Image 1 (cartoon, one colour):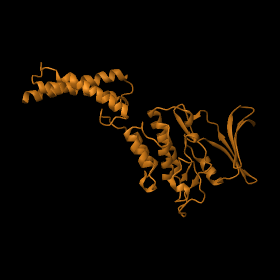
Image 2 (cartoon, helix red, strand yellow):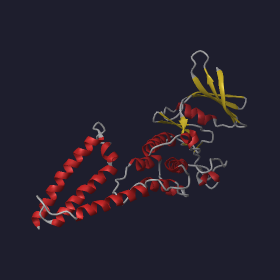
Image 3 (spheres, one colour):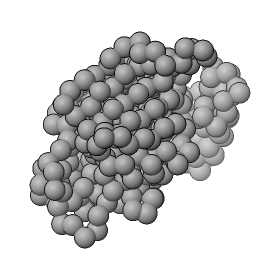
Image 4 (tube, one colour):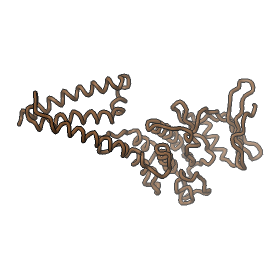
Length: 322
């Protein structure tokens, strides 16, 4: 093996990028001075697409040497992401942590943050189990106070024992950062995701999601957007209100015609017709995910055409009753 680069070196560990001289395959080598050998042996046995494979776990002279799979790509702190990217990332992290939390005893990562997650070709890899630990039901609080400020849950600072909800807290903080570029502010975060973040980051772990599976279901459940009522952002809501004001001015001056004779019914019908176009635009991803093979503009036309027929028939019927 040939050492290509020393990635990190301190009193606790040395992490190196190495290469096999014959096959030229790259690996990550870790030499740890503080470690839980059983934890790494357990991780070595886990087959999970979101964890790097561990090929060697070897202990010599109070030092643990690991040989891990080398993962290409940038960490999350080096990337600009869309809301759909964030949902995908959170889904994969939840699936990864679900595997760890279902072990007996569960493994708690305790250091989920952008620097410890690679996202490459739409796939997540969770790294650095340096402060991970098994859940010990006999203890009431953590022995060592460890964690990254901003992402670490209150229980990691000696108040209680780390548990699966500790990782859920970090996931909430991570999602806040990925959506807004900040750990504190939530100005540009969609309302439904903001509520998920608030629940995941409750100070009392009992008030957080019961499992990462439950949190994942909440994240993937996309909210129906009603224009001017619950838009993702303040700017979007203002645009919707401006468009609705324009629609109102257009419909106010409309005169009754064929097939709707009543002036008021005709105006309501036209306003509904235009508002549905706005509704369809803001919820296009919600519709398109069920018909991914149909181009969006064709799907938009089909849905709008069907709605137009239903809209006219309904209001003609209402008109006939008056």
